[in-house]
Amino acid sequence: RRVQLLSITKKYLGPEPMFEEIGHATPYQVPEEIRVMIEDQLSKASEALSLYNTAFHAEFRLRHEASPVLVELGARLPGGFIPQLVRLAHGVDMLEASLCLATGLEYSVLPHHSSIAAIRFLQDETAALKFAGAYDQIRALPFVDELSIYGGVGIGRRGHVIWTAPDFSSLDYRWKLISEIN
Image 1: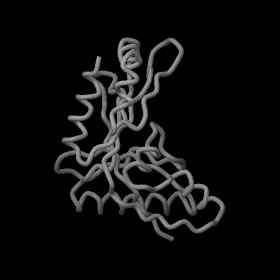
Image 2: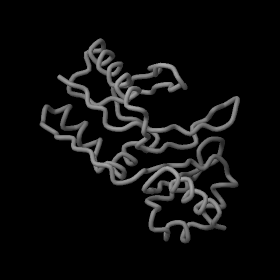
Image 3: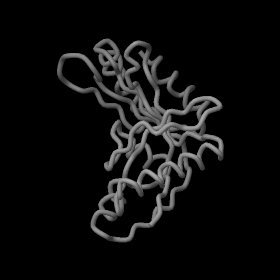
Image 4: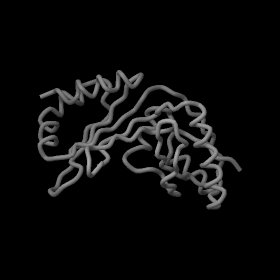
């Protein structure tokens, strides 16, 4: 039995006091010593919880000059479109891998790094209307994988954009290009 860390995802949070999730990007590079600490904690936690033949996700709080702190471990795939981001960034289908594990089938996970993949959630009606109005121009960008505007009313997420880039500086630059289209 072994735990295989597939990808580390950076979580983008909105302003205080809500710290709402506004996006994710993967893979996020951490120093090797931090990665080793994360893998060690995951191994110990999965052993303690008897997690065998299953996929799971974990959330850690990473702080400067401190050990990672495990804040959540769920015996399920992550939400927030992270499996889609992992597929784009690493070429690994997390759903297929999870189903194979659950049914006792062999699944060889051989991730490769092809890009950084990210998602930004549209938080309000104004953003959703702006992106809906520029839908064709945004979807025509070769690095945009998906743009979805959700229906309905109320508060919370109103849509999302998924895109890729070769590195984090390009990722930020491409988000700027996307968000400035009128």
